[in-house]
Amino acid sequence: MSDLVLTTIEGGIATLTLNRPDARNALSPELIEAMNAAVESLAHETGRVRVMILAGAGKSFCAGMDLKGVLSDPKKMAEMLRGLSRFSRAVRRLPVPTIARVQGAAVGGGCGLMVVTDFAITHPEAKVGYPEVDLGVCPAVVAPWLIKKIGAGRARAMLLAGGTMSGEEGFKVGLATHLIPESQLETATIELAGKLLRGGANALAVTKRWLNELDGSMEDAPFEKAAELSAQVIAGEEAQQRLRKIYGL
Image (tube, rainbow, N blue to C red; front, side):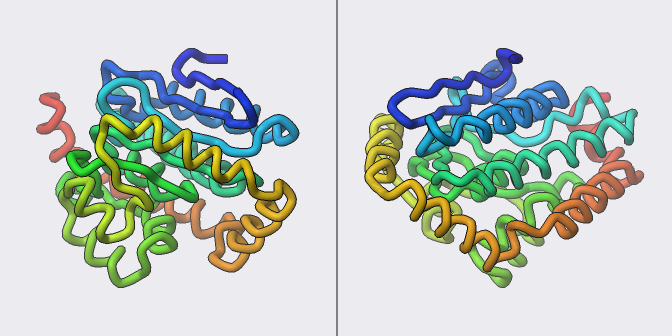
């Protein structure tokens, strides 16, 4: 398995760690492919795994989509967005509780990963949010998960306004379930995982499945459409011009 995602399983707790620290774990085609392989493998380990932690190596959780290498390749961009959508659904549908351990930046697609998990722990100084419209990009892939997390009204205002906010602000609006000092982030995540381990495995699995059915997380069509919408906008002239300027191309 690729070393772009590190997987450990210990004491019933699986940890999937995005491992592109030099790029702040930005989502490249190769990283997204490795993420999907890792979560697919984990889905077959439900007998050993009772809780899953999603983490990022280094100073940041995930700085969003890394589009520099695929700007001139619309098909590759579309594949990345579809891959991120598949990963998000796979995480949501795991039959165990999931926790995002969010340090540093969780921006765009990275913030999407933060809100797709059942719990998200971050710190006051973190940088979170959805600046897609500022870049001429449509945040369609993350929109369904954000709506489920904080409600349609708040999600509408956040996605249309763009920009980012602090971890403390993100916690106040519901992007995170826990806010703690950064120095305690890892310890608090393990403590929460330990608490979840004490729940009944079948009770948690059935409850999570039911919650997913109630909020539409088991329906594929909206997520597939979201990926196509994002791909169309990124391939357009407005997004291309803005992104090329940002990347210095």
